[in-house]
Image 1 (cartoon, rainbow, N blue to C red):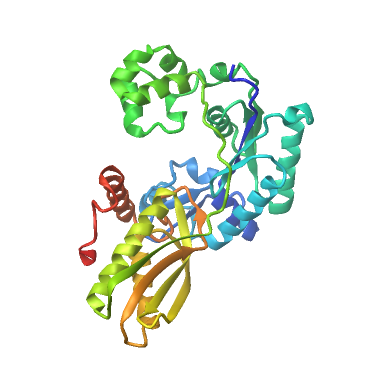
Image 2 (spheres, rainbow, N blue to C red):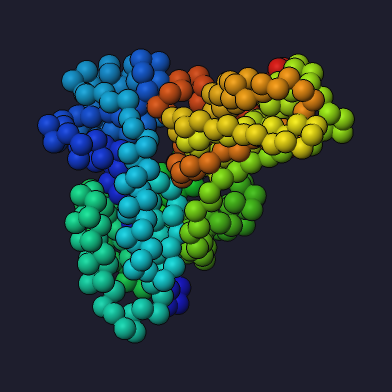
Length: 380
């Protein structure tokens, strides 16, 4: 038993799809795919489309082959952000501690509230409020920790609810396939399969020292999670308003080649930070301070993204429009605002499968060897 913690995990069902169906009732019951163009990837799909094997991050062409009758919509991240904020505000006003894990996923720590409220009834009322004000379906699970809550929510979707009583964590997860353990990637799961491990219960029975020998420190975590044990805390939610960087030059300059290289480097720096935090920006601002300390700035609304090549292009355009005095520059600044949480590292509505793989490879190298490990040639 994990003590008296009461953690509820809430997940908006097929969030992007549900929002599109709110906008157009004719889409109800239809296989629906939200994603990029012909060379893009699936950002989300309806349960009707999933029956044909369609899933998130699948190339659109493959999804159309599997489900040719599906309706494909490019997606509207502005609209998704609006609904996400609405639901966030509803939950935040009613719970003591909220973590927003992604644009459509939340954890709330209700520990201690059971002395004053019937928690299952309280959460049902919360769910009804969300549905009433947003029109969006939502599933939830009440458990003693985040791990079991997330697993249970996934099991009862769509539009489901469940309470896992204290002390029943291991029994609940025991028969489930290890693929359903959050944080286990395909490679780890393949290794487990080769070891003859298919379920949580079999994994829980493995000696911890054997798992540590095979997986390192992660082996100890696997052993605990296989038994439904998770001590991770609900992290208080706060909305980051912006992310920015500035560069004050050692000597004032009007060297355009140097300034363009600086823009590339600055955008790459904070673009990587966006992807690390799994966030997207909807507005870019460029600031120039001239040698006489006169400061000007210009911003532009954009489709939500965190892809460097799109951000660099916009930043350069803003700089060209802003730099009119043709005098020496003392400082250059780049700022991303209108930040929203996203579960994907890049904008699935505009980027291709190749783009996704490229950014994932770049960010892997940057995380392993440092942010300066990989740079564009134009930034050198």
